[in-house]
Structures are given as structure tokens and as C-alpha cells.
Length: 318
Image (tube, rainbow, N blue to C red; front, side):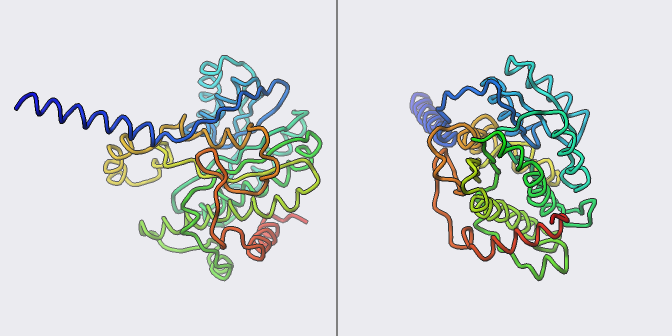
């Protein structure tokens, strides 16, 4: 009996180990070096953003950690420097929930940094709230702040071409829909405080990421600047910090077993940032280090164009 129990336990452990390998997904195998290149990673004080920053710093890039909290940002600089072995890592304050802060960040960056080779729009929130500008927090941070940041830095990216823009979306974009009447009325693509409402509003913001990249690729044709959106995988990261305590407790054991760790979660971001030969796939959506097909609503030219125009208006861009 004891031998049977040990055998069963061994089989279970083996299966779980194989499953964990599967869950980790594909790895970015590119050996590209980035000496002399400058990269911005938003939301890089924690989670997959910090893991991304560590890898890019190891490749020789000058990495700018663009984060809201100065205390956490400065702490992250020390961690990234230590883990990467590179001292060429800096913190610059950026609050994506404030269009004024986005403009200030861009102005400071353009004055103090000569290059921008890769912009990684990684930061995201999963919680209700309101931005400094009176917009829904998930729409404002996950989409609009990055939309403005990208536009303000586009000229520098063009000057330093070939360059790339990578925007972290999610598989959950499949559950999103953009109702512009709701946005006009509520300053967000959805309303409500229930778990279901939060899920839908987050999904809407992730659809914005995919459509933004789809439209951006059209506008960048002929510039040698390319752009990509991606699903990083289901990540055991700090994004769950915005959930209530009970939800976090329930999620913790599941996340430990079935979710990717942050290093695995950063792989598709890194692939889109450094992989050779994907320039012709600009505007496409990636997962597991490979281009993926998307539903019609995620490549709808008319909706993407309208989202761009509405975003320009909300940001006060000409």
C-alpha cells in the first residue's frame, strides 16, 4: 500500500512538473545585444515590467524605468542593476493616470536623452477609479496614457529607427467591446463595481491596446518604426494587488501552480522588442513568442480609426 501511494505521488509530481514546463510557454531565444540603445519600460518597478527591464539591461541597453512611485522606482533601479549587472538603469517618474504627468515625462526625457530605440508600454491596472483628468482609471492608464506617451515620443523613435513600440495587452481583449456612447457618457467603456463589471472594463481596455497597435502600424508605414501588441500569458504578478483580500487568498494557490512567473511572462514582450525578422508583422498581436490570429473586432479598421481620433481629442493632440 505504501509503495502504491509513493508511486501515485511520484506520477502526480511528474505530471505537475511537466504541466509547469508547459505553462511557462515559449522562451525568447534571440541573442540580440542592445549596446548603445535606449529603452523605456513603463510599470517596471515590479512584475513582468521589471523582469523585462532586467533582460534588456543584460543585453547592454540603457533602460529607463518609467514608474509612478519614486520610492518604488528608485528601489527597482537598485534591483535591476544588481540582477542585470548593469549600472545603466535610471528611474524617471511617470503617472499614466495624469496626462500632465505624461507630458512632463516626455518633455524631460526628450531634453535629457538623445536616443529612444524601444518603447515598451507595459504598465496596467485592474481596478475601478478615476484618473486626474476625470476618466475611468483602466481606460486612462491602460490605454490613453500610453497613447499620449507614444505620440509624444514618436519623432524621437523615428529619428533612431529602426525602432520598436511594444504594447502589453491580454487574451482578455477577446471579451472587450468598445461602446463609444458609453465612453462619451461615463468617460469609460463600461460601468459598475462588481467583479464581472471590472472584468469587462479591463477587457475593453485591453482591446484598446490591440486596436491602437493596429492603427499605429498604418501610420508608421515607411518610417522603419514597427509596433506590436501581445498577451504575456496568465501571470503570477502584482496585478492581483488591486483585488480584494478574499480574492487574492483564493487566487494565491492557483496562481502558484498554474500561472507563469514574471520571467516567463516577460518572454513575449522581449520577443517583440528584440527578435530579428518580425518587421513585416508590424501591427500584429503575439502570444507565446509567435504571431496570433485575432477576431474581426480586434482588427476592425473603422473602430481602430475612431478610437485613435477619440483618443487624440481626449489628449488634446492636434
